[in-house]
Image 1 (cartoon, one colour):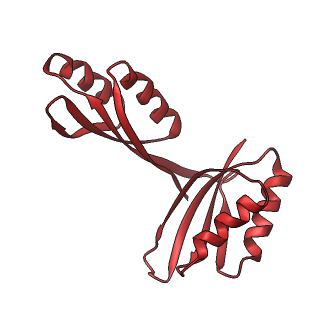
Image 2 (cartoon, rainbow, N blue to C red):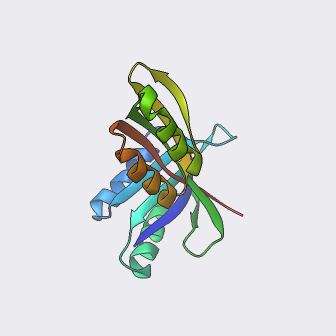
Amino acid sequence: MRHTISVLVENKFGVLARVAGLFSARGYNIASLSVSETQDPDTSYMTIVVEAKDENVLEQIKKQLNKLIDVISITDFTKKEHVDRELILIKVKYSAKEKSKLENILNKYVAKIIQHKGDTAIVEAVGEQAQIKQLLDSLGQLGIKELVRTGRVAISY
């Protein structure tokens, strides 16, 4: 099962490497990782989606993270009310005759064309993973040339 946790850390050289190293050394897979500075430039916020078979594995991950000196706090979103989103940029085939079909697909989701040139359009979408998956399935009919994803970000109420 996938679990989303956030880790507030000191914004220092090597912190990301130590956190990632902790996961790899114990054989835990990171499904998604997003990191950025907070309003305070001395701290960074990591959102990590991790594969954990059960609660014991998740608890072990949190305990190991807490041992790292640069970790300020950890939030486990598993049983907390929260909002999570993912950003995706998708390069799709674009033609005048397919334009209305593309627009109909995009209108169903929180997605829009942010640029188009020649036979290519770049689409931006923000949403929950299930919404993103549905959008990708729909856009697959038109032909996806390339895509990039941010990974999940989350915040509690």
